[in-house]
Length: 109
View 1 (cartoon, helix red, strand yellow):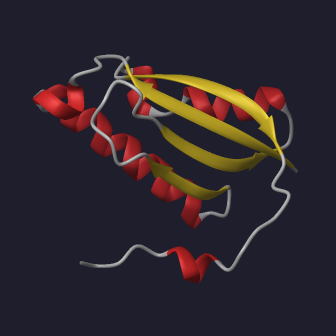
View 2 (view 1 turned 90 degrees about the horizontal axis):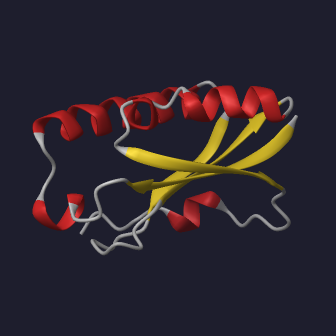
C-alpha cells in the first residue's frame, strides 16, 4: 500500500474567523466522521489541522491506498470536498521518520 498526503483548505477564507454557516457546520461534521471512520478501519493514520483562523489554515491527512486512483476516490469522497466547503490537494507521500504517537496527544487543558 502506498501512502498519500491529503491537504484541504476552506473555500471561504473567513469561515473560521467569522463562523461557519449551518450548512458548513453540517458538512464539516460529516467530514470529521468520514476521517474518523478511515482511522478506525486502518486506512488513515494521521488527521489534523492547523490551529490558525487565517487564510493559510489547512487540514491534512496521511492515509494508505493501493494506487493513485484509489487515493483519489478516498479524497474525493470527503463530504466537505463534495459539498465545496473545502478544496483538496493529493500528493504521493512517504513517512521517513515516525515518533511515538502517544507523545503527541494534545494536552486536555
